[in-house]
Length: 443
Image (tube, rainbow, N blue to C red):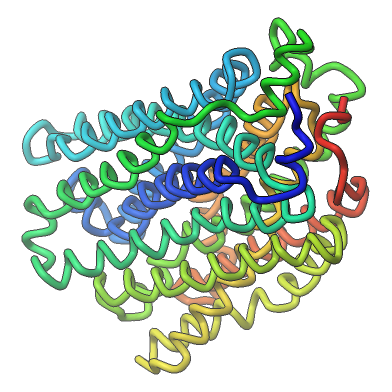
């Protein structure tokens, strides 16, 4: 099988692989956004009314955290299958499971119906959902990158990863539209269920595209040559691949601190400063639009300046802009200044998400074909070991930072973005440059 064609130009199959991953990965953010954008609504539906507002907010975010901690398990399981069965077949399983869990979430009983068991069931469903999400990018990112032409792998990476932020934007607009149409009482009564059901639409699109596709030519070639491993996942923990995995672990830890400095705190910052849920969801969505553009453009930039330099530049600039970005957003919400709200949305979306445009391509270029899905998936998810618990860390930090931020959480968000830049900047600096590497030759 001649793989050179797929490494030199955009074929129809390469475009379809990228489109299918775009819709599949967009679902990840689209689904997660509902938990963060509807935090105050879900808190009223799933938790006892006696809890205070801030505690309700953070407890509801544990639904978000449980989705995140399910990802490493899903990456291990489905990444291993992606390296044994193939990327395409594994993706058919993950998107189907994802769709089923979205429908089940929409059918949840409420606290008024079964008490605290409603919240427990919610957490269990979120965890299982997270396993399918972890498998989605474990097999999906290599699928798109292995098809993409070598010269434009950074662009393909930015588009694929930018899908997450487009999912944030779309989800935010959907929540805002539902709130504006139904109102908060109706959203708490039944509207939140219909919001979760909308996730079935992009899932069906991705499923149809993947159904008619073949596996990536690079994986097919490795299979023909009998280069596949019996248990690819375990090879991640054997030198020299182990050293690659550890460097990726630090990189991804920093990147997740960066990403969730937006996703964990956006709604809290905006509603805490006085915006209604609908308006907060709207500006959250606007930040997602800027984030998607940033990830796509920065992925493209890596095709010219290299992966390593792009990571380091984004780390330095994000550390410098962390405090101004979130303070401007908070100030805009507190003063109802539309210009500041849009500027804050631009800064918060851009500086928290732009390095993510490099992730699919960089991770795919760090692991060999025989273990690429396992390495990309579990390496990606390893960043969640520490960062999935950000709501838990935030509870003591709330007291520490209160003299600076008062009752709003804008400085907490800035703190995590600063920590993020330091971590992923150092990790990128000690790692290699991978631009232009032949994916078939990586061991």
